[in-house]
Image 1 (cartoon, rainbow, N blue to C red):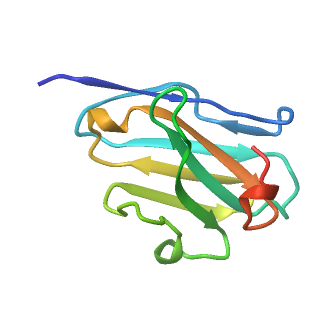
Image 2 (cartoon, rainbow, N blue to C red):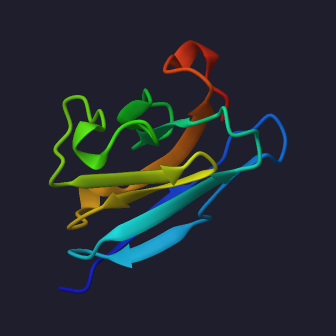
Image 3 (spheres, one colour):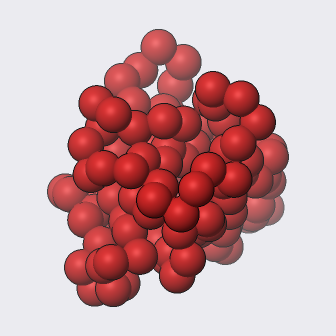
Length: 124
């Protein structure tokens, strides 16, 4: 079966200081890795990855990461770490990987960076 999944990634920014992977296409069963970079100062060391599966749906927090947390301590909330993997080794960038792609993984994915571990003060 040769099904294609579409991963459209958007960036919501207050300027051009946060950039991420543009539209990404990958085959079902494969993995898709998205990159997020920012040019804010090094104090923006927290990163959140969100997904919106359908227009109008509530955003879903996939993971919260920072360079202060090692990979085992990333906060995936209720989501499965066998499905998602995130990394952040420097303040200015991070990645999110969606593994074993399925049709339900389609959606808008985007990152938000923050100085604090609080979504109320996060900037995307």
